[in-house]
Image (cartoon, rainbow over all chains, first blue to last red):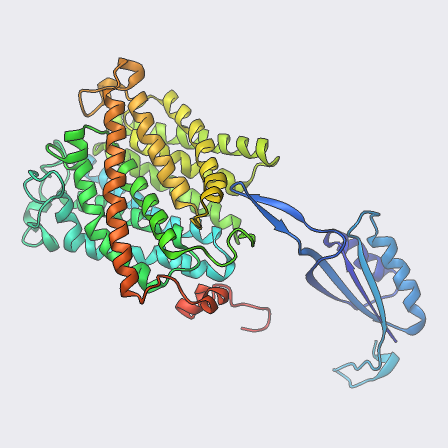
Length: 112
Length: 422
């Protein structure tokens, strides 16, 4: 089992979510996050005073999928999240030791 | 007594009273998330402080006595004591008012409240709450009532009569005095940690707009009510108030569009308030076209004070009480000397453009200088005494400041709700 974590632009969230649903992923965890990287933030002005915003808001999507599904999920995420500009985000893939469905106590691939 | 006039003045008093909680939202939105409760609480506690001090001492010091003293009223109406009968019947002052003095007690109390509340904007984010309460209690007794008497005390009063300066609704009394006091206090407190390094952002822009809306609405009572009768002058003050504030919204946004490329909501709301400030001393004295000119002029001046002078001199006027109210009030007072219609003036002098005579302009400037000296000196004395009383520092500890004043001063988080945690 693999966990695929994507940190994406907030405005691409709906597109990525729909693409994942259409490609056999039925559960995900979404969180609002802030971070910095190559995008370097932007400037805002309040009453003429410059404010640098270098923590850029992003959305983090985490899904856990079967081993053989992982590559396809990554491709779907890339296709739906990419704009080609700096700041499109990153995808991380990592192994998952165990998955447990709390309601039934079921373990492993069947619990996904 | 006239029922219509009494009703008008009571409604005006209520509108001015609404401005203080309105200001709490304006300041609350501009403050940081961790300080919003403290910022709003400093404004709300003023309602309590001034309701008591004004009844006990303030009214008597400002409008009591026999009117002979040029600097303050008298001590004959302390606690409004033994005076109910007189207060219920028609007022003797100002002019031939047709309403009970008691209405004027409330109306003037509301002015004192909003003045004290504006001061808190300068010290947001670091001043001890107890020190704020102590300072404002003394200020509302020692500074505001004598100043109100000097400007509005009628015959013999120092600024209004002897100097002959015009102040329709409180440019000197309310805005210059509060803005200047905010500057003195913010210098005595020192800058917030990270000032000039960290970006301080308004945490809730819609709150700023809500507060500006309430201030705008209340200000019609503030300016029109200062005619003390539902007459043509009140109508003129009302129209001028709309004209100046509207023009200032446009000019503030235009300045932003030119200098930083994008007009903002916070900027538009700040312009609205600056426009209200600038027309306050002139509301019943100038023609509507002049109100538009004054509104257009005030935003660039206040913008320069807030974005450039503050940085150049390095004082941390957190929510720009000085840059908006004192600077806007001074400009309004000076422009009154230029645009005042001679027939509407309370003195024999008219505005420069109508009479070609500099005497009113000179009186206006002298009145402003006297206000600044009187308030500035008293503020400094009171502030230094207070600092000594509070163990040499008016500000909270560094740890408390980092934690936020909501928790450190009040033990109360403004936004405690994380999903599932309450």
